Every structure is written in C-alpha cells, then in structure tokens.
Image (cartoon, rainbow, N blue to C red):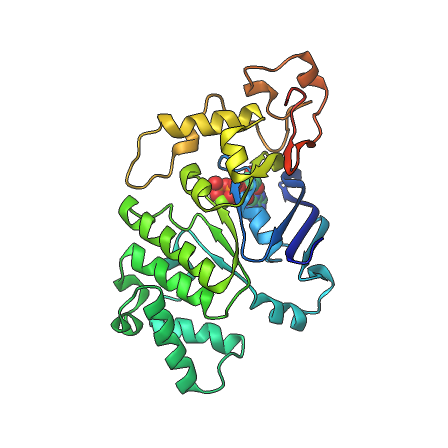
Length: 319
Ligand SMILES: Nc1ncnc2c1ncn2[C@@H]1O[C@H](COP(=O)(O)OP(=O)(O)OP(=O)(O)O)[C@@H](O)[C@H]1O
Ligand SMILES: [Mg+2]
C-alpha cells in the first residue's frame, strides 16, 4: 500500500549538454519516500546527488521519468499550482549564506519566505511566527535584527532551517547541510534536524558525504555512482550487509579517514578515480575500480535487482 507515500520518483534521468557533449548526471533513478521518513543519498562528488535533489523539487526539469508528490505529477502542474506545492517542498543548502539575501535582516528573510507563499495574514502574525521559529531553531530573538553575515556559520544554518520551516514543509531536501560547519556544530545541527523531523513529521532527502551521519538519520539509503543507483536498502541493512563492492568501499573508507574540522573529504580517499561522466565505462560503471571485477563486468551491465526485501543492488555477484 502507498497510503503514507509522500513522494514517488519513477525512472528519472537528467542530462546536461556541455559544449555539444551529453553528460549523464542522473540515470533512471526510482524511489519512494514516506511522510516523516529520511532517504539518505550518498556517493562521491559528481555522482548526481544535488542534481537528483533539484529534479525532485522541480528546480530542474527531468529529461525522463516522473516525480509524483502527494499523488500529483509535478510536471503537469501549472506555474501557479507548482508555486503552491513548493511550500511543501523546501531545501537547505551547504552554504546558507549563499542562499540568503545579504541585504535583508534575518527576520526579514524569514518573513519574506512567508510573504512569497502568502502565509500569515498580517505583519504582526508573521513577526510572531518568525520569533517562534528563531526560538525553535535555537537562535536568540536578537538574531532577527542581524544580517546573515554577522552570524556564525552554525547560526547561519539555523537561519536557513528557520526559513525552510517557515512554510511548514512536508519534505525538505538537505543538501550537505553540515559539511561547511565545525564538527561540534555539526552535531547540534543534526540533533536539531532530527528533533524537528519528529515534531513536524517532515520527510528528508538527506545528502551528505558523512556516512556516519547518513547512517544515524536515514531510514533508507541510496548509493549513487555516476548518476545511477548501485545499491539501495534500509539503512541498518546497508551498513551491516552492503552488497555492492562500491558501497563496501565507501563504508570501509569511513574508518580510515581522519576527522577534520571541515569534514569535507571522506569519500575522496577512495582508490581510483571516478570515470568521466561524458564517457562512462562499458558494462558495470564501477568495473575499472572494482577489485572483484571479471570479464563479465567489463561487457555486461548489471541491472539493479532485488537481493532481499527492500534491498536492491546492481552487481552481477551480489549475494
Ligand atoms: N548545470 C550543470 N551543467 C552541466 N553539468 C552539470 C550541471 N550541474 C551538475 N553537472 C554535472 O552533473 C554531475 C552531477 O553533479 P552533482 O552536482 O549533482 O553531483 P553531487 O553528487 O551533488 O556532487 P558533490 O558531492 O560535489 O556536491 C557532475 O558531473 C556535474 O559536473
Ligand atoms: Mg552536490
């Protein structure tokens, strides 16, 4: 049954034309997301995580496939209907400063989000709700009078969260929301996101290089490689019994990478280089880097197939 299904992504592809060549950023990705649940998206830089997040929000148009939110195909909505839907689907970015208008005070930025979406009837109501939001994300009310650049990185991210919450969304795409923050602040923001999710029953698409955090927050995890899903499973299962050699390498790499304050590089420590997205390898896209690859992997592309209930992997030798 899909009684609780909030989002259905069906066979979505997104390609970019770059100087006459086609780059496959996202290829035939499908998943469902239930209300109040978290899908973790992992994969190296360039694997298509942000592109997928943007296609889901229809900030980018898909070339193929469908995005169905609460039973509505987003591609079929008029501009006006889409604007109304946008209220339910928000995004939090890695760099909150870049997404905030630097000439607006924090309170004005939050109220502006409500005005654009026609929320709150009066200015007094909007102001009251802004104060509540500031308090809820752990900011002093005085932060409302500040300009974003006057705040610390962690405070800026709290503003980004408050602004997203202003519209009472049902789903939030969190695109590397903690990558730019110090480790101690990362923990606070993660706890805040988790508490808010429980309180407000929001679904998250949580994109992060930090597999530990993904494990902590996600109900389901999807691993992307060169724009394709190579493995997908319930979080605990994925971390305990990963089937795809790429996922296994990703998980093993967590243990080897020293924690830095910025914690941006864990996945860069993988052996080998990601192939060019303009000319993906024949057969299995991971075969040039896979220690277990055989001749079959070089020529025959493995399909994403069911390994067990809710567990999918695209490897000839999984299981
Ligand atoms: N607007 C664009 N025009 C052309 N190519 C793009 C565009 N946006 C993304 N790409 C390409 O699409 C691929 C996927 O990029 P994307 O930003 O989605 O990856 P990502 O997994 O979010 O990476 P990161 O971890 O670095 O944020 C990359 O090869 C990227 O260069
Ligand atoms: Mg990205």
